[in-house]
Structures are given as structure tokens and as C-alpha cells.
Image (cartoon, rainbow, N blue to C red; front, side, top):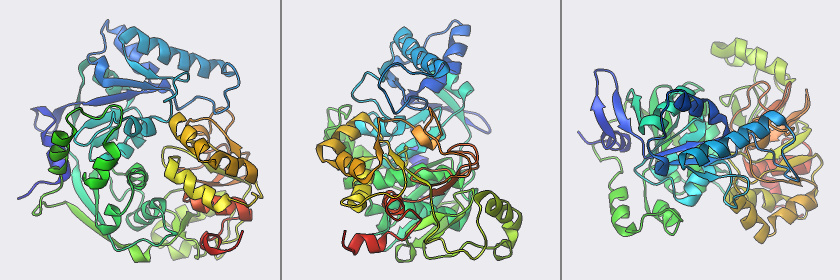
Length: 461
């Protein structure tokens, strides 16, 4: 029996095995300002960080996206200062606020070439799965596990089951990786991948850019998956080549990476298939990423989804929606373009293409995924497109994705967002979040309502 991509990654990292789990070596460990609890545990035990050379600090989760002066919030300022002090104490490289490479951790890792194919990568954030797009075993861990990795560079793990999601066909120009991700979650459910490592395959997946693959792997967590991954191919190699931390003997490494692909006879515990032609620009209507429909659909009634009737009723109440309402034309109050899901250069270009020469009818924030992305976007004039449209161009950080530092909506506001979660209160108390692609958010900004991006892609400005 052949091995899956995940099997190969797992086997290459096992140090010791017990009946129900295994001790794995960690190749890369990212910490952020929310990791201070783990450093406190290390200090309390009188220990040191075992491999500071394999540990990287990134200030991203709580940092303000307006940086005119010192951080105003004392607690957040303390967390950022603690990260700086902890990294300095243990000799950890920090991508801090004074570093021109600072950004969201899941953007910085691949961007710098710190995240590479074949590696096991962990961080105290569930969306570490983003970096599985490179063909890595990347996943989020809890505070206790963070301290364990800091002290030992290892982690005990139970091996998950394997799932393959195959998307074949050609995606239309208006369909982005975000639409693919939301469509998969709508099909299998918010817990449909629970207990599984998910490999994405098929011609539509191979046709995605690395940025698109990262969006897809990022959203694996919203289907309950342990991690998401795409086998390395020529697209992967082209992305990694020349990155600052790429291996010196690149060609030799590349040969090893290409061998990670699942064998022809590999068996998965679960197989899911989607037709790329059937995927349309999509939007969430409820309080779970599972609550996704094409933009041309109408809001469902509890009776339409009897197995989830209670959830549907509660979601409609919170979201202020009525069954049968068309999604296209639903008025919004604000937009947000950013987060580890959709704030790379490709995402900003897609949004700017729609906004160019047009005005937003609602306010909004654009927060690039990293300081490097910000500089690249400004070199292309994307920032001028956003500001000319009436949106705010900010610094890099998790921002409105987690409702930090004032980057949040007001109670009752409806927000079109490129983020990964639409739970109650995710973007502020009482805020109603609708997830969609960057181009769809840009279209919503122009229309002042959730709308189909397709006419704006081909219509006059």
C-alpha cells in the first residue's frame, strides 16, 4: 500500500512511539505576543529554549494597525514588550514592529522561506495550517504545548486520519480560492474534517497560485481539520526559490520535496470530490463558515435544513435575516480586507481591480498581510486605489479579524469580510460578519451591499 503525503511527513518526524501517540520533532516553531504564558512556564521551571535557532517570534495578533506612536493600550503594549524581552533573553529572532519584515505570522513564515516543504511547523494559533500549502505538516497548538516545544523542540501527537479533497476542472475567473474553501466547508460541514489531516488535490487545486493554496489550507480549520496540505510541485518550487531562508542546495532539496507527493496506491480514510465548474462566488449568511451559499441564492429557512434547524433559526435571529431574502443586495455597513486568510499581494490586487476608478459606499479597512506585502502593494499603487475609493490603508496585523485595538465593527453592523470566521462577536460585540473573497468584498464596498462581483469584473467603471 502506498503512502499519503501526510504519512510521509509523519514518518519522517517520529522520534519515539507509544501505543496511542508518537513523539515528533518540530522543525519550526513560531511564537507571537500571545505566547507569554508559555515563556512564563519555561522560566518557572528554570529551563531554557532548546532550539532558539528553530524558533521565530512575530508580533502580529494584538498589534495596532495604526502606528503613529507608542501603543496606547497598556496591556497590549506590555504583551508586545514581553515578546521582545522573551525573544532577546532566549536568543530568538524576532520580526517585531521595528522590523521591515513584520507581518501576520502565517504570512511571514512562507514569505521568508522559514516555512518549507517537508517540515513540521507549529505555532500557538490554529491557522498555522496555512503553511501546509507548501507541503508541510503545519498546525496550531495550545499554551502548554507551546512551552513543551520551547523546552524540548518536540511534541507528543496522536496520528490523525487522512482525508483527500479533490477539486477537478477549471475555476471561472470570478471564483477565488476563498470560494473553493467555503464551498468545501458547506459540503462537508464545520466538523466534516474533524480528526483528519486534509490533502487537497485535483486539477483545480494544481491550478491555484501558492497564495490561493494558502487560503485553502488556512480555512481547513473551519471544517474541523487538524491541518491542510498540498503536495509540492513546480508552483511550490517557484514560490520558495530565492526566499531568504531557502536552502543553499535548493535543487537537492527540491528533488526531496517533489518525492513527498502521495503515492499512486495511497489510501485515504475519506475521499471528497467537487466539480470546479459548479463553484460560484460565495458568501456566508449565518454564524458558521458552513453557512455558505452562492451569491445568487436566498437565505434558507430552518425547514430547509432540518438537521440544523435550531442553528439556522438562531443564526437568522442574530444576523437579522429572514428566510427567502436574496443574498445579492443585502445592505452592509462596513468592509474589511485583511487577515492571514486573504491579505497577500494577490488578494490585494484582486480587490483593487474591482475598486479601481470606483468609490466605496461604506467605510472599511485594508490591512496587508505583512510589511513586505504593504511595500509591494504601494510600489504597484494599490494603496492609492484603496484610499481613492475611500477605504483606510493600514499597517500589517491581525486587526479586525479578531476585533483588536479598536479595529472592530459596532453592535448590529453588517460587515463584508475576507477573514476566516463569522462567529458571533468575532469582529466586535453584536457584529454580523459575512465571509467572502477579496474581490467580493470590494464589490460589496462599491455597491454598499453584498453583491455578485461578476458584473463589476466586466462592466464599465
